Image 1 (cartoon, rainbow, N blue to C red):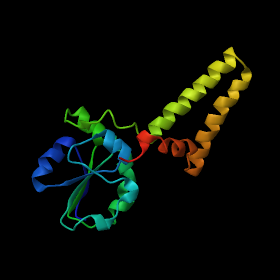
Image 2 (cartoon, rainbow, N blue to C red):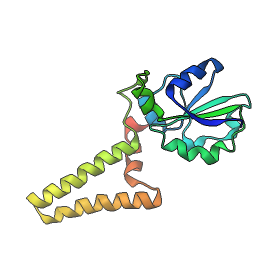
Image 3 (tube, rainbow, N blue to C red):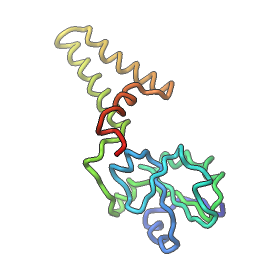
Length: 171
């Protein structure tokens, strides 16, 4: 690896004459929902040196730039011509008024679905505990405990259930 630096969306466009590979490290569901047209989807956990050639110029991006910070260990093991990180990810790309491909029919990313459901159930439990019975606080406690368990263990039961829904299955 000769070079690894952060570049802006404008600098990426200036680099296009060198035919860089734009790698989207977000999840497949996030990529399907909205993407930069030439980006390849390669979630961070699937990235390895074997996928790239020695003459490749790579530009990695995520949603906002946070996940690309996790790439440092992986990048050090990739042997190619040049490696860049798109500063600010797809959010900065859109903020710079560059186009994206948006598919509103694609399901929301799984973690956003979990967040919406858990948030709704916690609020519902609080409202019902004030209006119907204090025992509805158990509903909020149940979903709060589920989030705590998911955060500590890396296993989210609700996400596993949501993956079984027809609209979340790969096409």
